[in-house]
Image 1 (cartoon, one colour):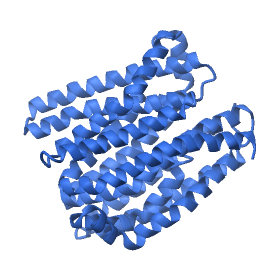
Image 2 (cartoon, one colour):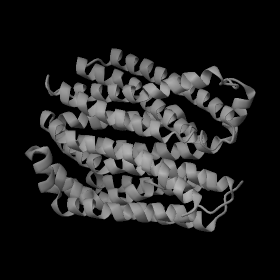
Image 3 (cartoon, one colour):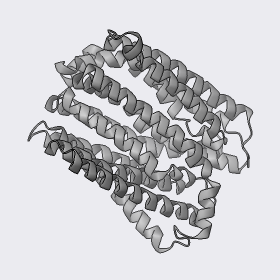
Image 4 (cartoon, one colour):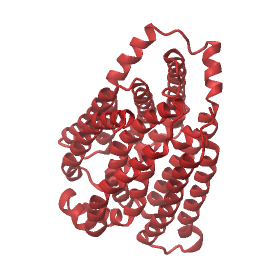
Length: 421
């Protein structure tokens, strides 16, 4: 085994261990939480997470991806400071706008707290992403693993604890916010420590030049991510309004349970892949062998668990999460091909950034989004009587085909094309 391969395996092992434990904690406590909160209350958490994830992407302008790419630490931290200021400004702007909206169109205290929790969630999620990227640059995988573990443990334990008081969805959101705050504590300390030794300010000419040199991130990568996340939000809106909160809550629970491997394992491996690929590029070495290895290993590891959900999803969810979540298991079984390919492609999703192909990736993603819009429009324009499960089957088929194309394209470009130095 080469030195690069050994380094990759060691890095993945450190980060993988923490993220797997985090995922195990989530799975172990989910059956308790699902018996404390019903699908309708879970629906509000799903909506909160989709809005804040979208807001966090906007708040960083995707500049956190530039941290590991810089050769100089001072340059990377200059971008970090700029990104941090930008996220604070956008979060405060969101707070003001939502506060004005709440004052004009006030409904209930629950709705008010939900709206005002969004800016805080956006800022914490944005800073978590920024802290992760800085730790990735420094190859401090232990901190990343501990932060991931802190997020999972604190969030889920707080959900269990708050569930003892009442079943309000606000407890779910509060636990999520506190979980992100806990996971960000180490990143706050690291940021303050580096700030004392910083050479560049967020206003300096050099920082502005660095931001401009990474313009593809906010010109193409940000719109790409925005479209991707807005697509999820659009789908949530369609299910919520057309089929109801209960259906959306079940769908969201199924989606989140299947996507946990993507968030923890796929995300962790993807981050290490990004850093190691950057080093290979600087050394003018091929990235394709590493990319192919990642996809094949994850594919082998995921076959059995995803197959179990595909064949026994309804019964598994009923036993594990309670009878009222059986429908979520039925939905999960339909979404297996979709989420499996999402899992595989997410692990190498940094390839368009590495290969300077973000513009092409943007147009491909736009095409996929238009396809999803066409599918979710069927109940409105083509078949108003279409049942939810029929719609979900069409969604799963269309997204599976789209992700298969994306996965094949990423492997193709990393094999055939040289990086623009």
